[in-house]
Image (tube, rainbow, N blue to C red):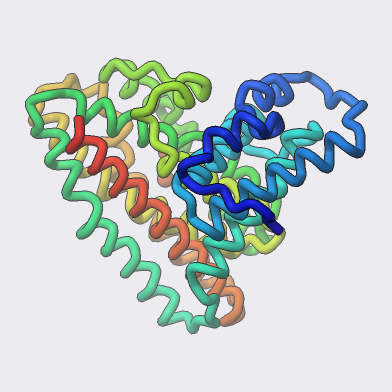
Length: 338
Ligand SMILES: [Fe+2]
Ligand SMILES: [Fe+2]
């Protein structure tokens, strides 16, 4: 597909010469209220070629600069287009090309999808969540006990990136769910609006730690990591596939890890003396997400899925947790450097 592989050294040059990959142009295009006709066959083919070059460098050659840029493009499209596939020509070309490469890499290149029995599925899913608790989450205790609040602000920035669009992605999965699994998704969505809306709780935490989040801000500030955008992008993309089972695995894993994250943060932020209402987001999710995790697991278990479908559930959870592990590693490295 690619004729001139992008090396680390000339990546900036490549981006400067590739107007289709410019984030400002992309933002302008995404903010148009209606698609604009008039993209010529030549401009479409140039955009496609640039997108293919970036996709290949990012997801086949694993060029870190290319991957970071590709994740930023997908993040901007997802954030400004309400986590739905875009209609406008430039975003549609970029989204289709980069998303396909990212999903194939995460779901096929990095793992093989194997059929799974009921017992295997349950034990692999629970094992993945346990692994994250043991390997990734201890940094949260450290962040909360650091004298400098910078660690908390870095965490908050990167957490909010991964938390964006949660309801939209659930809604997208609801569209694709088989009838016997729609109830699990619907109940999870309803809980987002019970008591104080969870979106309000998220904002309240950000404000209390001085983080003013917007997608445009996130693309300017280097403390927002592209590895965090990758978590959001993968979750969003799995809910756009017509096969819903990958996303079921991904959502189970998210619910499974978040009550553990929430318990650590509740304890750490309370010890630090932050006002209780500033971290209510985590107090609430310490309980509610444990229920959600068992509801997803029970739903998957009782849905009479085939072994092949359960294999997709496992693959979705595995890909989500692998991507999330990279986000934790990148966050740890950034906090240590700061
Ligand atoms: Fe929630
Ligand atoms: Fe939840």
